[in-house]
Length: 225
Image 1: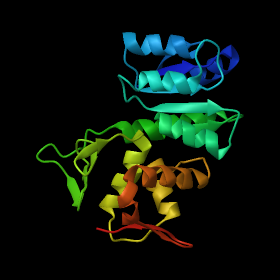
Image 2: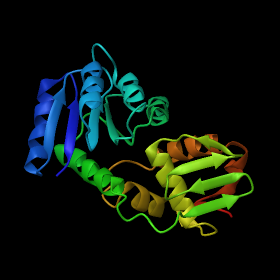
Image 3: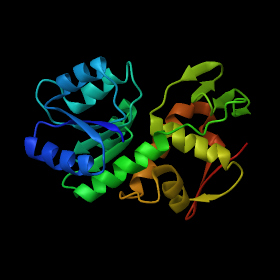
Image 4: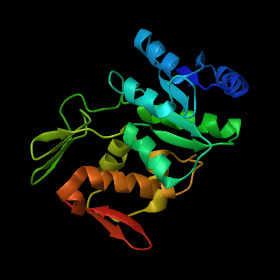
């Protein structure tokens, strides 16, 4: 069972998601705007947040930025806009998934389940840190930390997952389909443009080390190291 915060100013949408989430055994808390969501996150912890963008008092993106100051709780953004700019803005703000309205209740529950599985890091190596180093680039996959020339950089949770997957498969050509399956989950319901968006963000963060990731035309990607 997970604690889910649903933040949307549409009561009907909150009710529908809540009904399905409770049916799956989850505990649900509701917020009607971004400001209320921020205050709730200060008072208690949640396992995942479902956040609309367009809301009174405080919009979803601004709310996520505030929440990210104290918590790395996974966030799924709900939006009626599907432009790449909006998605990039959301992922840079630290969201884990971006769902376009309208969506089915089954789809949102599949996305919630996939993120909750990925968020469970109980299998992490506790005997020693798993580290990848290449020149001035260092990724500590156990601590979820990345350093570039001794300076720690911050990334959205999904960007870490994408980078670490490529590192675990370094020097191996991995297809776009395999990346989507392994990083986003076998039941991922979106399109592969999500991968393109995240890859742009990852390369932006890597800066001069972006060339570690090679694009394989018609296939996928390979991280060299």
